[in-house]
Image (cartoon, rainbow over all chains, first blue to last red; front, top):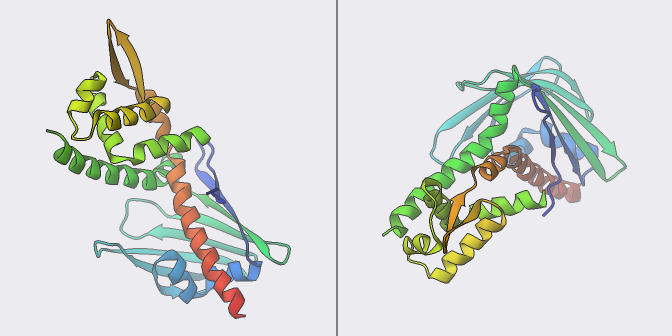
Length: 155
Length: 107
């Protein structure tokens, strides 16, 4: 299946842009970011706080399959309904610095919309580290399975 | 892009990853590889063929024998790490889209 999400991460920079078009009117797309009950569903997280306004903030808590809790929080700097959210995002108790996110919501006719997410990290090294995380997790899982297979299959 | 997807498919298979792990240690003949597994020689040879096609392994003739070498350069290319990051976001956004479509019909 074709992936609708595009990532633009230029070599050597400390930011990246995520874009995605949705078959949804822009107000519905925006609601997915502002109603706690909906955020909980698609982000797979518990919403402890979500204040959608200028100088507001958010706090999410996610429980992984091992039962460990992970906390995410940030400050909402700028909030314009159906158009824009500017916020910071931080993983609490992780060795990553806070990141700055510009979320722009754009209607494309009545039935579709586009989200542009511009994320700025403290350094290029940190950006690359965040980009690599899902890849590294995949490799670790593959590696664990590989060990099991080798134990089973090697004579 | 097409090729890269194939490479990811190639390493998605546990037996093929086990073959890569073996050959990465030292070059091996197809029969030496097959001996390490319980599966049939044909099965292993099919796996080797797939790995060779996407350039994770490369053949080298030495005398009458063929040895398979691990192509580290290709593996590094796979380490082009953006793809899993994109998949993570894409899965998330697909979920968002299908949830909101339900809200749309409720309206």
